[in-house]
Amino acid sequence: MRAVDIIEKKRDRVALSKDEIEFFVRGYTDGSIPDYQAAAWAMAIVLNGMTSQETADLTLAMAHSGDALDLSGVVDIVLDKHSTGGVGDKTTLVVEPIVAACGLPVGKMSGRGLGFSGGTLDKMESIPGYRTDLTKEEFLKQLKTIGVVLTGQTGDLAPADGKLYALRDVTGTVPSLPLIASSIMSKKIAAGAQRIVLDVKLGLGAFMPDLESARALAESMVNIAKLADRQAVALLSDMNQPLGQAVGNALEVKEAIETLNGGGPADFREHALEVASQLVLLGEAAPDEKKARELATEALESGRALERFRQLVEAQGGDLAYVDDPEKLPKAGIVEEVPAPQSGYLREINAKIVGETSVALGAGREKKGDEIDLAVGVIVHHNVGDKLEEGQPLFTIHANDRAKLEQAREHLLSAHTWSDSPVEPLPLFYGIVK
Ligand code: URA
Image (spheres, protein in one colour):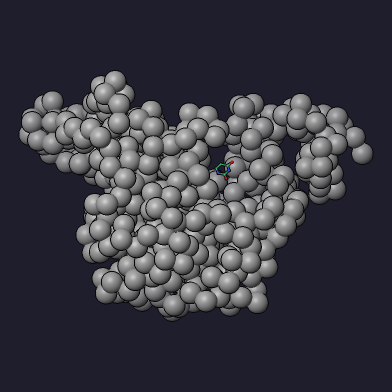
């Protein structure tokens, strides 16, 4: 078999066989197929797509390209959740403790920020001492003993995806449904997940711009799960405006802890409860959605979820003083509240601009390996549809650099657009794919 023949076949819109896909993935992982051929192949996939069988074959080939975690002897049902990435998305920090408090073990491997979307590991590192580099043995032990783990990837899971993702990032081949679906699902399968809740974001601050493309991605991932003998449900959720109010690492941890304490923004709390309920249902801790929601709500309101979060932080070396008093979390030197420049209804709060502004303040990486500033970010005080009077607080910037703050103010003002007549609030969810 030759790589060039496989590239030409895809270029000419002929579906690839399982053997051909496995040959290509194996060759790219071991270095016998060079980057330039993999880039040409990826571009042919972007342009010509893949059938659902090809997408499933690609996913499994990548999932089997390195280590695989077998959790079957550790927990009865291996649950996982994955968000396709967003702005202000600190959902895992609240959902995982809720689900653990409902009696279901969850061991999650999360990622770092990517572009304008934040990363759970970066956020958790706002808590001094918190380790995100557990070994496989530590991961398994903690999952068995306390039933809640939140760390980075352990071992060499789906290395083909790691390599291909880095290549796609610099060859204009990220936005492709089969490539995104196989990238996400290969990691979940390699990590041993059996039942997965996917939070597929759509809108201005998401990879998928609209409902149609998000639904197609969701359907593809749910279908891959089925072909791989796993079970997945996908929530289609809004990412036109930031989720909750806080965007930026320590600010988001603070908001998550407030939510675990019974406060927090209503939209974020509702989002977290819905994702948690779906996990409780998939994990068979409840017979139906109503009961699953009741259990999740009780876990949050009783403080048991907060207690599980404290347990998680302590187990991974984090200083609990920061959980008990989030005011201690890293703080920016300059905090400026910016008032609404006019009265009216908020028509749009562009999540992408808010995310990019937070990265520019230092909360994310401009390029791989950059240091990030855990303290900086933005608090967006309102939601689309809110009615404001001129001069009311619109957003607050947390910065460590005066020039960056000036730029952030300008960008954030442009992210808010206005209407004189009432504007419908945005839904949190657009549907579910089962
Ligand atoms: N997240 C991933 O893990 N992979 C993609 O391709 C896109 C988002």
